[in-house]
Length: 219
Image (cartoon, rainbow, N blue to C red; front, side):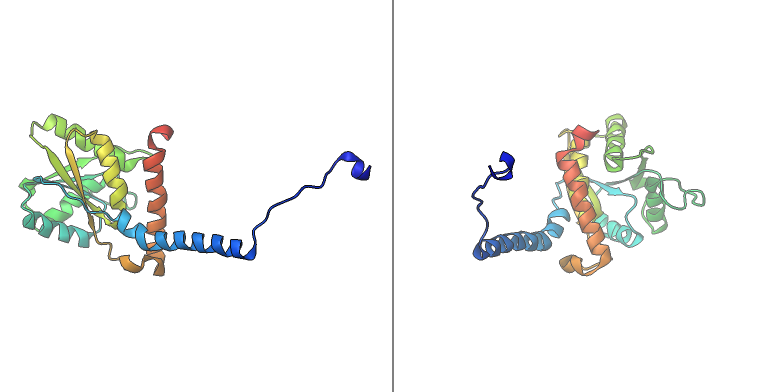
């Protein structure tokens, strides 16, 4: 008895050269679909008809300049700035959170302070965007204002995830639209050609997948 009965001969199917080529073409196609479609998917813009603009206070100053123009063009009546504690310069900055920092920057740029409200979010280790959305919802619930919808403005590929988390926080009670401002640190059409683009797109792809499929299970 060969091999003491410990092994036996078995027929095994394997890919031919044509088979391996088919597999390669399939996965190459998926990769190209990801490369060319993931950035516009993440940097989504779907505003709703409303009078309230909401921005994430951490967006860069150039984007805030665009915010002022957009506020006037779209004829919003109220601008709300959200954000948690700043992550750099906390002990040197006069402003301790992105909500107040963003609001102060807008005022310095000439924005009417009567039309702006800062809603700071508490310090949390994770789910900062969702926490900011919940803080905003709590403020709206107790403000006495009749707000039926908001448009959230954020930067580039952060839009899809921020939109999803704000929708989760509001639970369908009011309409939540989204507007993605252009991220000028890289060319959105060729994001894979710069380290900034690769970092942002890959990180947001993973973060969106977490928010979409695992958010409630891991919390």
